[in-house]
Length: 392
Image (cartoon, rainbow, N blue to C red):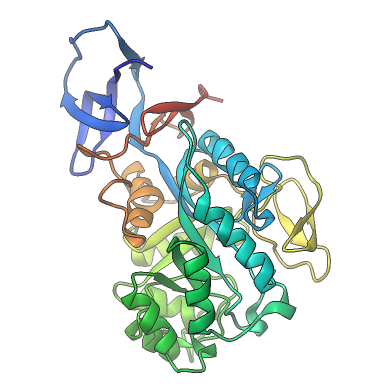
């Protein structure tokens, strides 16, 4: 490995400014210098990447992903996590939360145990922890979550799972109206530093407002498996748009949420409150065909995954970079907004912004070099080239 990597002649989307023409210095996996102008330093024992005509942005953070490339977090193996971490830099993802789903206690615990001991590898996306999606959801809004394993929120169960995960559960999706302790579940987890997200929920506006007071910080996959806007009750979606401080995940595949709805949401809240996710399952990156999610048969076409029984959307096959492109196509959205939704906001939401989510001195060199159409030229994970693409 060279002692330094220099990315020169690039437009740099740094944390607090945009440098129209400059260079970035990477040492020991960290950003050691961000400078305007031409690079005229040494070239011996230095890896130089020419970013002429390109932009540097922070790597994407996917806070909700179940699988990719025929691997799924619920496989509960190091091999599955390794497969995902190796595949994701191709789509610009440099770190992620390995996401479980509603299943038996045994299967959830197996998945959490594998995350607890997983060792991140150089040149791959980093696993930042786990996102526990279910089983504490509303069965009437279960979507693709297997109904037979849905159960009310339980603090004893969660704490057992957090111990198995070695404290790595960073986000949990739950239905606040199903808490038998009327908010104590969310209150307790929020105090423990867990990002509590309302999802697969039938909560109305008043219930979401109360849930936020109890510690809920975001909504899971906005508009999906929740109450939409109605003129007599604006539901969870309306609560998100109205309540300050409440964030929301967004699957920007133009299927889970239409382009017009995404435009409406963006027009109302901008990029400050949105967190781009994929919610992808194991078929991402593979041909159409028959797959499974949580033990359920799934049919995958060219653009979507649906349960064979019931035809509900079964996660997605979305790549982060494609979601970013769909958002960039909306009126008023800039590349700076993409950085906020795909990097900065997710990093802040799980308290890793001190080292992830922006281009700043001392932070991990999780970097994307992209062209003006958001095609990825290079993905660097902690300064190591993890993907070299070229515009396609």
